[in-house]
Image (cartoon, rainbow over all chains, first blue to last red; front, side, top):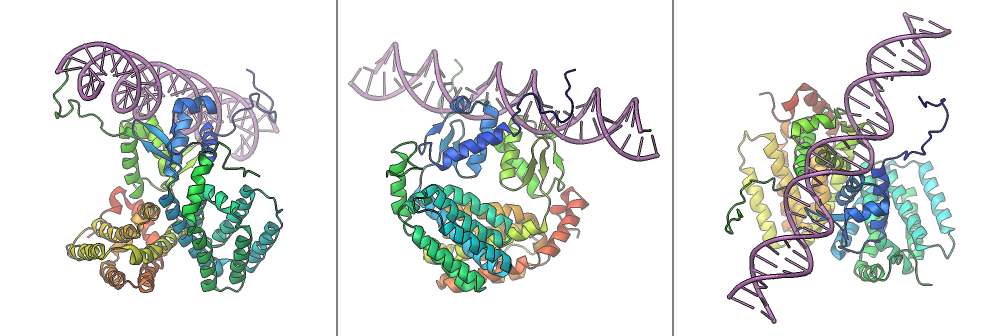
Length: 242
Length: 242
DNA sequence: GCCGGCCGCATTGTATACAGAGACGTATTA
DNA sequence: TAATACGTCTCTGTATACAATGCGGCCGGC
């Protein structure tokens, strides 16, 4: 009866994408940045009010975040923010190391020369990021470099797992980057690129291994700092007192 | 009014565990064994009838299986069985290899002598499994050996990821094991144990690497066989025509 | 006869109602 | 005063109703 001519925009703006998907992305961001306090209980009714959708999509999103390791779940008690656990972060770094070392070796075999050129170009532009760039941006560039190598490994499953791990340890990487890691990161990335271009798998794997192991060695300090941030204020994850 | 003395069993058997959890386990088993045809659409209404629970717990289970890689999901079209994809299985084997090699190295460092003794005992009893043992049982023993090493790496995240991968490639391992892999498996496991006990990380890593790489080399054939099984009948995954 | 659009049905997406479990406070008793 | 038991209340678990989407069949036009 009130049909419209084709090509017209739909009357109601329409969600256009799942409410569950949107809820997932919002909650995921909050979890990554520790906007929930560790072990804080996430009452579904509260989230209904905050996200303005019903419990169904919210539960769907929460469940997904549990299987991805961002939240924990107890039957009949609901969902909680995961604790910031030193052992867990340590384990994740260790897994990340083994995956990225493998990715480096595979990339040496499988990446084309053109792709390595492009990786070099990316490294160059990222070096050009301003001195005062935010840690969020710097970690973004760092992650991007590593994920590019993983992409060049031509192993989709490896990349997928690595992305999940990266999201889970991102908070710690922000803190680590604040401690003036930028210079060392750049140098070590350059070494990896060189090894890739030289098609030297052993050298590339060793560079990657050392690169990540050095971060791993400082986890305990980073975690301690992380606790301070989380309990200092909601936005502590993002900004550094200037 | 009808209260009971302590220590008595509850009157109603009670579900005792989430319907969602049970639905998850049932559907997961079906997915692992390819009781759904690749790309078969899983209509929620059908599953309601089959599992005798409402759509809510079923959707929860299905969503979980998507994030774990057992199903695929398309918005407004629902859930499908994942395709049996050679590249995906290949990638999973590659990831598995890198994780298990890392686990082997870590286990060399971290496992106690007593734990290695126990691993040896396990290997001995598994060797005693009868000649006519089912492939399901044999693969179970194989997986158990590998997961024990992962446990000895003391890295919970690594173990968790490995378990997921094992479930996703289990179907292929059944087929591989049918092709008379038992003897080689036993020998190679023994070699790994020896290297562990000698506390020789390089040798242990090399043994693990070779062990898994040999399986990887045959993936294509295994997948071809897998397709035949899936399309031959529901129970094809389990039994081998004598 | 073939192509395109329209309509109806089947299926998914979301909200909500209701039931059950657990937590907390209070009152009662030893 | 302390411990316990009970009742209430909040929150989660599940079912179901309703909305919206997409697919397939049917009809009409070319």
